Amino acid sequence: MLVIGIAGGTGSGKTTVVNKILQQLNTEGVNVLSQDNYYHDNQQLTLSEREVLNYDHPKSIDFELLIQHVKALKRGESIEQPLYSFVTHSRTGDHLLIEPKNVLIVEGILVLTNAELLKEYNLKVFVHADSDERLIRRIRRDTQERGRDLQEVLHRYQTTLKPMHQEFIEPSKNEADLIVPNMKQNTVAIDFLSTVINNTLKKQTRHENTN
Ligand SMILES: Nc1ncnc2c1ncn2[C@@H]1O[C@H](COP(=O)(O)OP(=O)(O)O)[C@@H](O)[C@H]1O
Ligand SMILES: Nc1ccn([C@@H]2O[C@H](COP(=O)(O)O)[C@@H](O)[C@H]2O)c(=O)n1
Image 1 (spheres, rainbow, N blue to C red):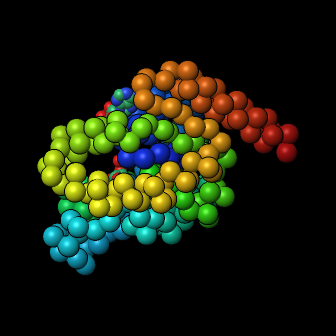
Image 2: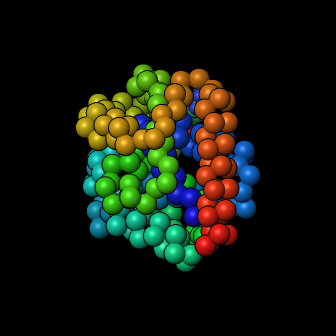
């Protein structure tokens, strides 16, 4: 199995890049694990307590479960992925059954910050967009799709999102094999990434057939 980690700040375009790669891949199947589904549940807290948590620190992620799931899929086992709600800031209680496929993409702001998870990747990618562009995209998305108001987005940006980006996310760019500039549509980078993935898959298949 080919395992690819795709990180980048909020609004950098990780989901968009993943979707474009998926359209171009010449493979039997690709699974995408979004880090967003691995936020801690926090059901023991009230909604107002959950609303003020820091969701940009590595400790907000259940890396233990995410790593366990990546390892299980690599062993050929299926997993039950929890689903997360940005409205209630907790898991929905529903799960998605994921069967192993020959490509696994792990996507999220913090997926290049965890030393144990880094060991699982064959290819590490960081999607870059400038912070003003990311903030504009974040305001638009969170107010339209995640039930937030402008005040909430700006407050979160200043208090946790920006400092956590500087402390954890931006430095994780150094772990990347490839940096994708995503200030505007970058078809060259998407074509390049898809080719790298297809070539790596071909090499893996040849290696498996000769062993
Ligand atoms: N290259 C781009 N140019 C303009 N808008 C983009 C670009 N890439 C992504 N977006 C938009 O920015 C928003 C955030 O993108 P998304 O892929 O969800 O980012 P992320 O997953 O990194 O948070 C979405 O509304 C998306 O349509
Ligand atoms: N309950 C939550 C959990 C996370 N967030 C924010 O989501 C961002 C990561 O998701 P992207 O799709 O933008 O990569 C992260 O910056 C958290 O602040 C949230 O708002 N509420």
